[in-house]
Amino acid sequence: INSAGFDFAGFDSDLTINKAGQSVKVENSGAAGHGVFTLGANHSLGYDVASSGHNIAEVVVVGSGALNTNGHTIYADQISNSGGGGTLTLNTNYAGTIGESSALFNTVNVSGNIQLANIYANTTAVTSGALSVSGTIDSSVVLAASSSLTIQDGATLAGGVDGASIGSGAVSFLGDATIADNIGATTAINTVSLAANKTYIVPASEINAAVNVGSGSTITVVGDDLSLGSIAANNLTVNLSHNTLVLDNGGIMTGGLTLNVAVREGDNGMIQVNGGNLDLAGLSSMNFNITQTTVASTNVAYKVFVNGANISDYLGKTTVNNRNSLIKWQYDPISMSLISGINNPMLDDLLRMSGNDQALFN
Image (cartoon, rainbow, N blue to C red; front, side, top):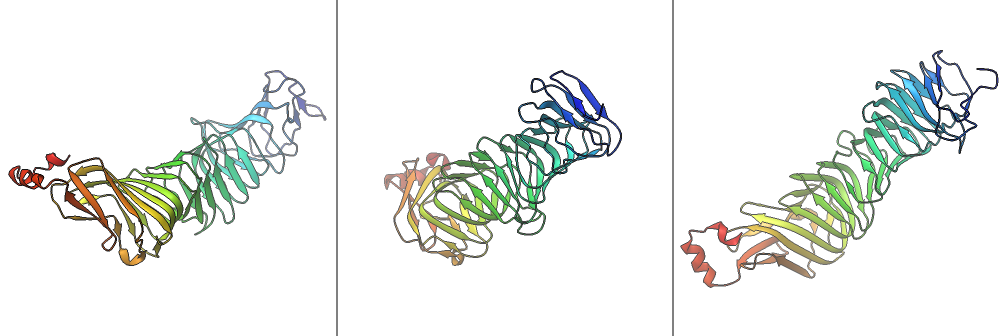
């Protein structure tokens, strides 16, 4: 290596620097996507690595080593860690992939406005600025105050998110998504934003943040309970099945609200307000779709809104649709319950003769 640095010149060569802190200028004057630059000890860059349009294939951090970009840009398809471990501090934009699913970085520290393709790490700390991911982020994420994480349309978040302190950071989902891991479960974050006219399937049990839902979107509650800090939504559809959507601090719903609810003896989908106030006064309509029915009793109330003292009444237009033609339902706004009934009086006799056999109504 001379004073001008090292040039891969479009060849599939390997350059390894083992001396800690040694700064080497690395270029690739030939075709993009060739050359591997390996750092065998702790390094802080003194130059950009390659250049736009002449990127190299890979930068490798060995073992538990640490790499700090130090304000310089890495032009490489991938920044990886051999064997897993190591620390990467990234403070300039990088468009490639960090880590591998089989060799995670231990820690990735991000500051500034960074747009990544993929990131594989045990922990990603966004210490300032905005991180945006277009592919997969397989990592737990910690957000500092005023920092943000954006999951682009088509991207996947495969890890939990927490604040560095209570109420710090924001997460935005720009497309359809499955939210499998909790957000804010250890330390609450400030906000989670869900885009308009999208579908969100949520196996997670907790999103401890103010959740802002774009108009026309659908939330599907997969587990027994999904707890949100609060909610602000317009024209929202919630697929509850037998599950419960818990609002720790209420919220507001406007436009049309559609609840898809399954009902069985002693159990049904519901919205439970534990604190604050859920304002339903601005709704233009409320629609219930009974997706599954296993009941054998009439004139029974199944509460769909729990803790009514924390809920502003909605007294407007309500429709109830049921796939089972033997049972009729009505919504009672006073008790905030669905009331079961029989469509045909002759069925009362049939029900008694069957010994209240629930199968008649399945």
